[in-house]
Image (cartoon, rainbow, N blue to C red; front, side):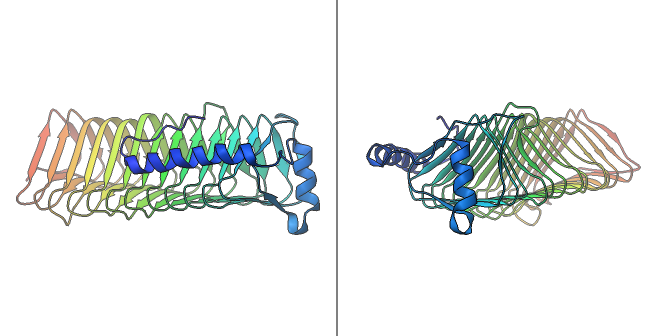
Amino acid sequence: MNFVFSSRLKLNYIGSAVLAIAFALSFSLTAQAQTMSSTLELKNACETSPGNVVAINANTQISTGPQAPLTEIVNTKCTLVIAPQVTFEASQVSMTFNGPLSIQASTEGRALFLESSFTARSVSVALGNLGGLLVERSLLRSTVGGISVTSGVESFVDVRGPIVGGGLISNQGINISGGQKFFGSFTDAEVRANANITVNMSGAEAQFISTTSTVNSANGAINITGSGAKAFVEFKLGAVATGRNGVNVTLNGTESTINGSEFSIGSAAAGVFLRTGGSKGAITLGVGTISSGTATLIQSSLTGTEGKAVLQDATVTAGGNLRIETGGLGNSEVLDSSLTSNTLVRILSGAGGNCKSQNNIINAPVQQICL
């Protein structure tokens, strides 16, 4: 299985991942034969194990059983406990759990879903250090509660399509949290929830990238936050992010970055806030659209020194104030774009910074442009 990681990841991360894979392959050669290979065997294990807890102590592939729209029905909840350096894989099968599905992976444990459909009342995944969750051309769906994924040091959450109605679908919210060097990726994926969709990154070099994917919160907000020094968020190549109650990307680290290219971000009833903190934050947006029911704020290092906010070939429509700002010695540039607001359009940099507005169409009753 090939995993595509951003070039911003450090070489030592890639090296450790390679060692982990090599160790797992070595482990599989010496481990006992798989105890389960079918959905029926996993169903029986879930229903009959004490506390409905199933230990996955050797590399396990569930590849025999019904495929959607047919499904293997598990009449209970189920918890899969994946041992260190062990991979649990579901390949071309479908299962439905009449209770919560919980996956708990130890260090270097992984859960892979390939062309499969797993539905439960709620879904929770806890990854240890160097762990991973892959959902490829598959569906993880919660029918009553939400979906939550927590990960340890240098872990990844990778959701890939293409598949109609696939990816992550939640009746409530979707919450993803990552630690040091966390890597989150949506590629050709659908991620939908009725409530909030949250990505919370605490690591110094954590990243989240959405590529040609649709992320939609029907009745909530999309909140992406990062506290690490070099947190990185990107929407590209047709990525769409819509939250009825707002879209908020806030990165507080010194050198945090928000990028957008061929993207669409919108909120029907609330605001769109794209903000980087620290002294060297950067926001670069090109060939995209932003629409909000209230304010749109694009602010980089507003209280810092060297922030950058660049908008080019973009269309931005706001029901309230539209502000593109940097602080101190910041660089604010808006080029070849259309900006519309019912109240205010403001493009400004700090007193010692650079502000540029060129070839733009600006419609607003109050305009504060590079004053």
